[in-house]
Amino acid sequence: MKAITRTVWVLCWISLFNDAASEMLYPVLPVYLKSIGFSVAFIGVLEGIAEALAGLSKGYFGKLSDSTGKRTPFVQIGYGLSVLSRPLLGVFTWPWWVFMTRTMDRLGKGVRTAARDAILSDEATPATKGQVFGLHRSMDTLGAVIGPLLALGYLLSYPGRYRDLFFVAAIPGLASLLLTFFLRKKGKKISSEENKFSFKAFAHFWRNAGMPYRHVVVGMWIFALFNSSDVFLLLKIKEAGLSDTYVIGFYIFFNLVFAVLSWPLGVLADKIGLRRMYIIGIAAFALTYLGIGLGYGLYLTAFMFVLYGLYAAATDGISKAWISNLVPQSDTATAIGTYAALQSLCSLAASTLTGLIWHYSGSTAALLITAAAAILTTLYFGIFIPLAEKRVQV
Image 1 (cartoon, rainbow, N blue to C red):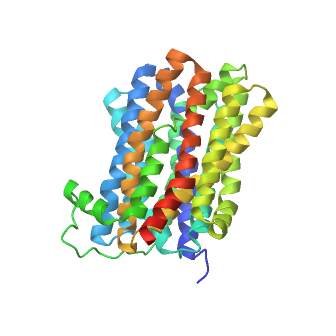
Image 2: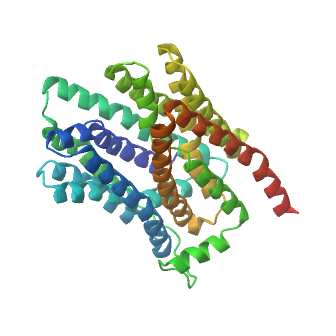
Image 3: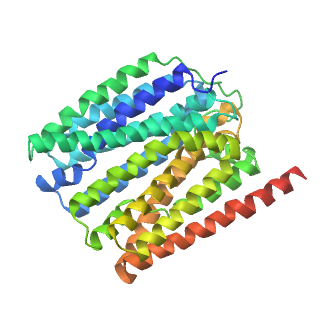
């Protein structure tokens, strides 16, 4: 079986086009909302609720995908909701309309993510999951590079025409949706009594998922509790005196490094082990926060964003590949969805905590505390997980 199948490539191109559409709007969305009269507080609440909904819905729809044995419909509906939401966001400026359309976009992400990742897992073997998930993440993140560049080019030609950009972004979005009709994948329907969504069903899954899955996911949740929004890194380098152009440039640079490294690090992870690669990623995260927290200078900042791109490439797709290897194939979407659901809440708490530390103790303290927590997490995965695995084997 070849490592990269036709289905994997289709999903890769779907994600590239969709992320290009999404990232065309991400940098300008706050500017657009402020231009039509929305406060920063409203924007923050809007994004927080939207992201929390996306995370929680991943657990629900992941379980539903496993229960019904269906994958493709969830992928199609999920991308369809996101594609539809973007032009709708530019139609009216009423607060309830903006809230509804932005929530629709994030709900679409929640509907599709676990089922899509389950398809990727089904298309790989335990020995090739690193490169399969790595390639997908690479293509997805390449879209995150292309999108802002397209938006920048458009706004240079048509300054201030933010609303029109929502309709332009519908073009790559529609391309991603059309590609979903080239998918023909089904999962394995769950035959147990706990095949419907309920908290009891999730409790049943958690009890029966096995200690290796629980140990790994708990560690990832602990890391997520301190892994705040990328905005804080950007704010820190802005505080250090870099211009807006440099700040945006470093964001694009980070995504480019992320995209370039994801596939080769996935291939390497299959050789050295997914756990080792994940630890390398968290170590790079810790060094990034230490470096930006303590140091200044253009070249140092550039190197730190190389490390940050390495962190993302070594953990994002790798975490899903690792999780999918720890559960039966019929529970893949549920396992990934359960992890993603609580991870979103942990990330929301992380940004809140980092913001409070930043406010009361300063930016340096906020970043250094995050780095310290990441170092402790590497010890958890480097020492506790191997010991736990040995106890299970005994």
